[in-house]
Image (cartoon, each protein chain N blue to C red):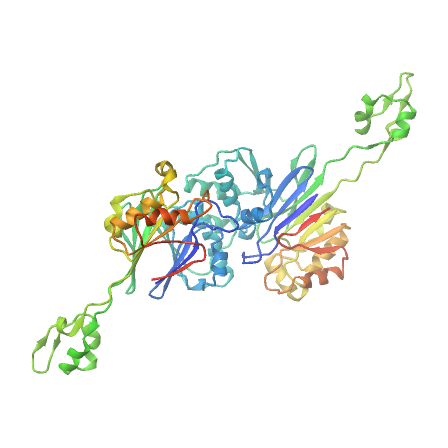
Length: 301
Length: 301
């Protein structure tokens, strides 16, 4: 998995900071998560082959998460895209985009599919043989979802010694990796357990922005490989969290600790702070495996 | 008058080029003309005090002229604007903006007034004691207006020698400058002509983007101080003009020459050309007083 941070600041785009957008590369998929104003330029700047994006996930309809979407959709048209594009986001997102296309008399030539979300419980919204994507219902000022990306179950690993020992033909290897037993010519059944090792654990990435601190989502986040959790404020501004529907760095770290995740990435910083290392310092006091998102930064998991 | 070019390229925003947006400072007004994606960042980058903008003029609803508007309107709210904002643009612009504000549950706290245009003839859309703004109906693929900004008629200049000669009290000076005659105590009427010189000529700025070459608008553009005319293509691509509703540099220069304007500024370049000096060269062969718009460039008239 590779995570490209295109923008990780809250509120308004500025000269050196961008609103939320990130690209997750996972098992050959290239998913765009949120799309604040300027995202298409950030994609170019960081040399991401954005034609490979086939699925866009929008957490909520505040401007700093969605105002760059219609421009990207239009640019795809101008650049002669033909491949279908799927957009997942809150109910209303279809009207938001199609009204703008209608007024500019510029419908897309490529298939544009909207998957509007309104469920308040977690649900699977995308699934193929490589990846499953679930919503993480978040508590913000308007309807908002995070997204949990999980690699689909991987094949078991072949126990080559055992397989050779039983003189099993290579033609069976694939079915063994999928969990099947093998019946030898003698009629003896060799259980799959004897022939395989456990598969590599599936990696997972949870994107949680924007949200208040909310322990009810811990079960969904349990032991994910990487948690991106917003930290709009430091504890010194904790009193603003309830009203604005945001979290502090400390709260993000508490969430990471309680959910026993492997790594925590902070982002969605309020632009009121001069030094984002303050977020890191605050979170690390609770959860050591914390890192800072920064515009243009790339994480490899 | 000062013209700040924030963006002067067509189609999609890129790393080094921005879609159309410009700020015209005229007689203490600060008018924003068009607002492509990224305009608010360009305003910051070029240190324009954008809180002084009270009137925004949108030529048409193609993305490269309007996708940055909702973000700017939202940013004004976040930065606690209180002054009213007036937006002039094609019918539909109100719905375009208000739908997005509604979906993000983020109405403005300041008064936001829309002035929707649908007239196919030129009309005065703004007028005060300093400036008059008229539409310039353009021929593009969708309903589109250019805008003609003209300084309101200036006061005549006082002929000080004549005034002193007649021993006229200073209390009359203002009315004389406004064109009034003066009746002396003797009953003798001194005609205004004797007491004044002609006022300084009013400056004017005409913004024409996007449009096909269209001689019917020459009377409106007659002798303007500065004409900004789109030149999306070079003559080598003239065959694309009819279909796309655009002009070549040569056509822009022809328009400037026939309308006898003082200066021509080219812009709205297609990003297919590596060197915008090609536009300058082509136009200058027809109209010498041609200059190139460039993102970040400032013109003083």
